[in-house]
Length: 365
Image 1 (cartoon, one colour):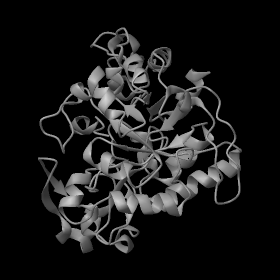
Image 2 (image 1 turned 90 degrees about the vertical axis):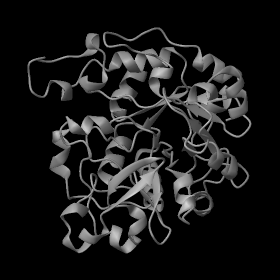
Image 3 (image 1 turned 135 degrees about the vertical axis):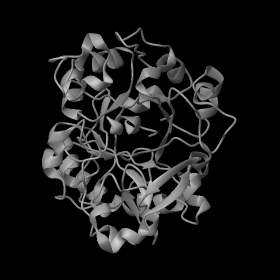
């Protein structure tokens, strides 16, 4: 499966704050109820295991399945609007490749040191982006999602916030938003910096508060430090099991997740968003004992929200895979993912990201 190479996501002062009340008021006037003291479930790009990611279809389903936050990855358009896409390259997530009027926009660019060929949001105005329709990013892994190809428009951050607010009114629960700044150093380098644009939208939507239902996340360090002085919204430093921040080539994520690194992170962020295997490792066969990362992060005053739990056999060790191993779609079949959720919850995480928020809610109990 060629698509499998793209499956890894490169997407509170104290632990008590993570589980305390999320106070505040929606523009609509709906008051935020006190949040229960339990881990939050963050719908990773919506219920993206069941609907094309970053669409109203995925976000609404996630809300109906009981999630606490919906997550948009944010990239800018040519005219500076922030839209929800996994990457600024949209050839694999929209119908742009089949649109002859945009054929001349195809290009090759270097993003965080890697050459990428396709169509890029920064080469389209918002009006042009709005003519496109979303497609499933992983059709071989999630063929059922292709049923919804072409049905959903691309969304701005304002529209994602509106979905969360409407979901709050519909369900009587507080639905937050958890935006990620994607490739901020790259965008700053082409004259489309993300930080001030995002801060303006947070303020516009009454989300510029440490008690508002919002976390702002990023894999880079400098943009989080920069935005720290501009907003009171809670910030989360994302990390991965390999590599390091694109803006700090001499720093690794492993260093950020060490005891001294976590203390440094706590100077500018409220939480840590590690890759899930940094909390509960796994080998080809099984899940392994939890690391001390949650304990160490809590000691530094950080909440911990690992990413991303997915249900398909492809992402699970052999002991948790289910179904007919000889079937052509074996890796796309659902496995015993409840064990992964439960291991992360048992490790003491304050929340987690999942493409299957309904399963995450069920495992949380």
